[in-house]
Length: 68
Image (cartoon, rainbow, N blue to C red):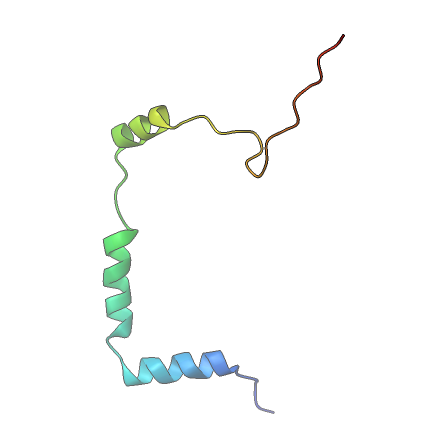
């Protein structure tokens, strides 16, 4: 009995067969954007300069009614 293989899996296998250098390009591009060493000093400066966030961002909370 044959195992099921989705259309997406077939497409990816076919694409990798046609472009064997695609995986090396993917690793190089990942290194460009994601695989970076983090600078602790820059992270600290980012955290200090962050503006306070509202507790609920989608709409303002109702204001409390004043007692009379």
